[in-house]
Image 1 (tube, rainbow, N blue to C red):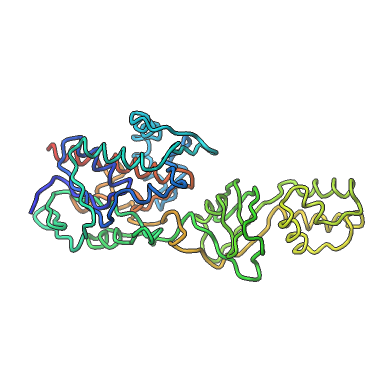
Image 2 (cartoon, rainbow, N blue to C red; image 1 turned 45 degrees about the horizontal axis):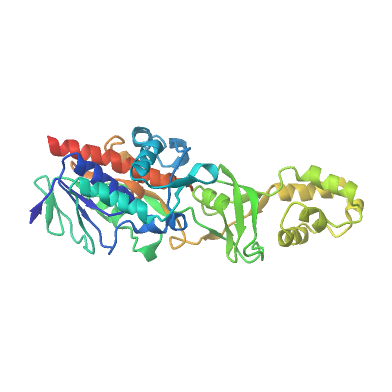
Length: 389
């Protein structure tokens, strides 16, 4: 058996970050992953360009049973710290909407950067290696023939199973007595029943989506199964089965309809809506609202009813498209069991959990990667300090 100061399970963003920081701090680190290549989710993110962080990142952009848990790591290793690392490696980047930062080139540059940082710290990485049974005794963890006094759970959540993602993090946590907040797909398209579904697959429109007390103003996309697009993906993390999702398509619909009635009294509702919405959507909404008469003959009460629907188009999703289409997993290892400073389990010395495996879930737009970097950094610093003792 070989002996290390720390074994990191998972060669994703959080795991590689923790390993690099710990290794450069003097710890002997081994990273184990079942995949043939490291950083698989990084490689497919952002259309292959990796939305690696967000300029507006702050703790309020994250969901958790304990909304305060993420503050320590996020404040100690910020988006600006990671951006400085990106620039130190000469990786060109650009900002898209809402503070989202992407590589100019391929996401492979981010993986290469993390591997280079690991190499600086002498980190050993074993790929295509099954975790198998984890042994624990005498203050040591035993995994795949390796022994260390510290073990880091960085295996992520079950979202995107085609990438090999599983819920093994939760199995390991339970093995050591840590509670798990029930996981669920997040940042995921929502499905609708046939009666509520609009046959508008591919139509996108600016909207404000609301669910679970959260509101996001971005694009909403109608799909052949239901609803998607950034605004809907955002609220999907807050949505719970049985709740409604509301889309505000026209914020000042009452005024717009009255103005249309004054300008073109012989036109129908579809024509008025088509001035502000895609034609197919205008047609579908006009049919749903059901005003058949010309605008000039439509009383205020009917226009107000139409405006109400346009300002709060309500759907009752039947569910989500599941982990296969979810960008991340909400829920996970309960934060009550962990130190917010070091990410170490309070009741199990030497056991750490970071990244998506933990009950901290960010908004769409680079926030989840920042949590990976920040939580990985926090654990890496703690591992280096542990090894130095």
